[in-house]
Structure formats: structure tokens, C-alpha cells
Amino acid sequence: MKIGTATVNEVSVNTGSGDLTPLSYVAVPIFKNYRISNAVMGSGSGTLTMGAVSSDNTINETTPITIASISKNARIDLTFALENTRTDATPSACNVHYDKQGQKWSGTVSAWTMPWRP
Image 1 (cartoon, rainbow, N blue to C red):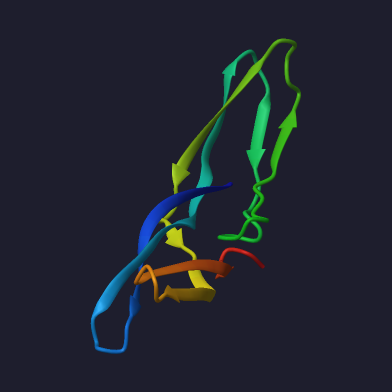
Image 2: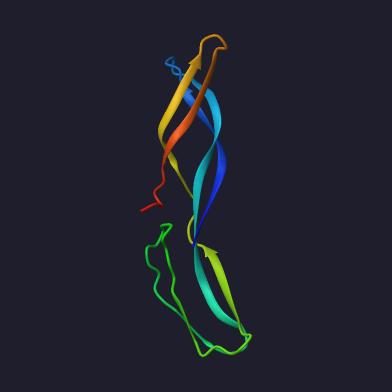
């Protein structure tokens, strides 16, 4: 299971003199990889079987759970665990503008590289 969130990071630009000038703050897409670590009958009776994970570490990851002979009003408890640390997207296309009158840099990120997308 994948959960996409966003964080805010400062983007800086090299003005040519070697100094990094703060440009702006942008929301950076991030990815956290969660997996089903346990599946048990929380109440009632039944049989659960967890299958192998497919498409691991992508937004298409799946973990099949087979449920057999489950009783009426039974409850299944799933436990999720963070599988690894977060992965941040990286900008792949940026637009930077310098306003000579206001003497201020501005910019936007128009495209992101997101390694979790197939």
C-alpha cells in the first residue's frame, strides 16, 4: 500500500556568482511504502492466507489475502508497517524568472520525477 503526501521544501537558484539565492517554497510529492505485515481474524472464525507481494515499491503494489470459511459478523484485522523510509520526488523541469524591477527570483516546478511510478 502506498501513501502519497507532500512536504514543503525551499528551492534555491545559483545566480551565477556561486551564491544560492532562495527562490521559493514548493510542495514536493513524497512516497511512503507501507505493507500489510499481519492479517488475523479479530473476531469470529475463518481462515486467512496472505499471498506474495507483487509490483513492490510502486503505486501498483498488491498483497492478495484469501479468505475462506469466514463466519457471519466476523472481523479481519490488518496491520500495516512502514517498509522503508520515504522517497522524495525530484524536479525534472523548472521555470525560473528574475524580476529586474522587483529584484526578485520566482519559479515553479512544472514536472517531477517520481521513481515509484511504473
